[in-house]
Amino acid sequence: MQYMIFEQDPEQILVYTLFRVHARARVNRHTHTNTHTHTHYIQNMQDMIFEQDPEQILSAILPLYFNGQLLRQMQESVASELAARMTAMQAATDNASDLIKLLTQQMNRQRQAAITQEISEIVAGSNS
Image (cartoon, rainbow, N blue to C red; front, side):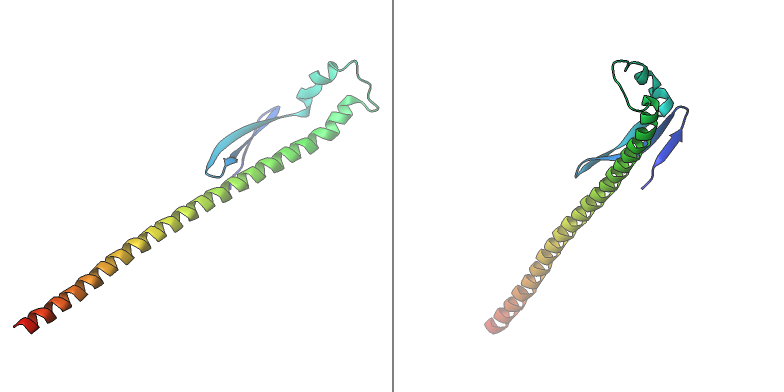
């Protein structure tokens, strides 16, 4: 499992595998923006009254939000890896079952051919 974080100013980009369906996963790229880029949202909230400074609130909440997002992305990556392993093991099991079935048929045919040959030899010996 690999995670790549590209540090750029003012963003951090995380690349991870995204789990969607049991049989499908894709690489996803998520950009986390820095807290300094959210100050333009604060300036548009003149109608709201906060007990604390909105900058302080965002400074406290955003790290928790980013940690939650990072944890979710890591969990999706692990789920994607496990789903890929399960799919591979199911394919291997199916292939082994098909191989066993084919080999059993071949062995039964050879055994049946040997029995038929012995019966033919016995009948040919009794006729002479």
